[in-house]
Length: 187
Image (cartoon, rainbow, N blue to C red; front, top):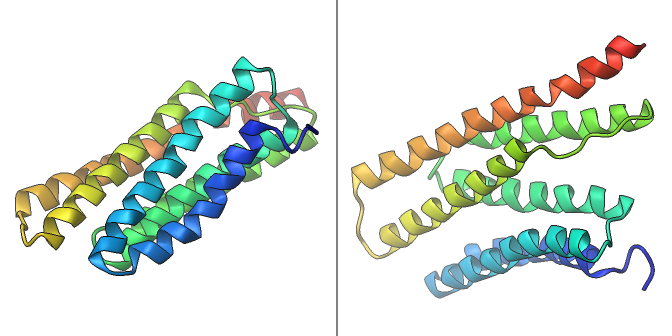
């Protein structure tokens, strides 16, 4: 199998391909919305396994180093955008996550062009996990709304948890400034 067509890269590509399926199902009937949650879960599980397989089987490639975080960004930003569209969260949350991701992508490219690299930090991996938890809370709240149960307390809890994750995402973006400063000092 060539470097591009290895299992970790296939799983990352599958995450990208599942994203429009998730959106299509999400905006369907209530039964389709439930299926969209399962599609999201499958896509999220591929995130856990692609990196694990790549490290365990020594299948890490430059394509995978680009594809894996890109697949995460596409799935997560799209999911938050869907919840902003149905007014479960504000669009500013999506813009915070998008701004952070664009900054990190620019920084990664900048550092590669300077002969350096940007390794995903443990704190950034924690941010991704927290985003998946926030999305899980949003799904649970949506299901409660669909079942006719609306609680202002649940709505506030979910909303403020998402806000905290957005603030944490900005913090992790600032944490990536260290490699940039190191490279700029060398010049």
